[in-house]
Image (cartoon, rainbow, N blue to C red; front, side):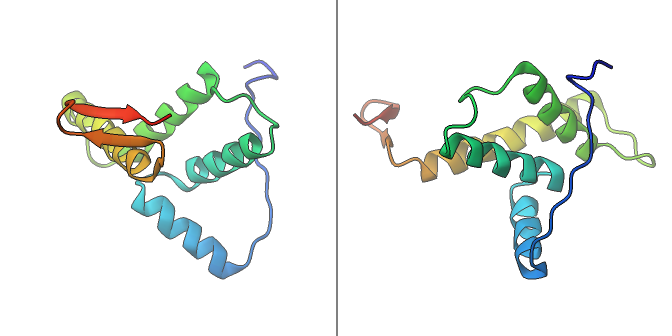
Length: 118
């Protein structure tokens, strides 16, 4: 593994109540805790103009890997089709959440879909 893609553990302290809220929110989004924390950090970096708007392929692969790991168990085999359904279902839920919270996106039934308001 190259030093650019080598993973390291980082730590920081937050109040217990805040950590519990983050964990609850991660569970609601069906995300692993580390995936949730990474997404919050990336959002903060974008907010402060410290990061690209588009994630790298490595980041996308890391997110997918985390989702797959969350679906797998050492005790219970998962069929490939069931794994795909679980991952796609999670993505559909995330898309729905984003659309519901995206002020610029509007659903227009007569047009047959979502549009971006200008």
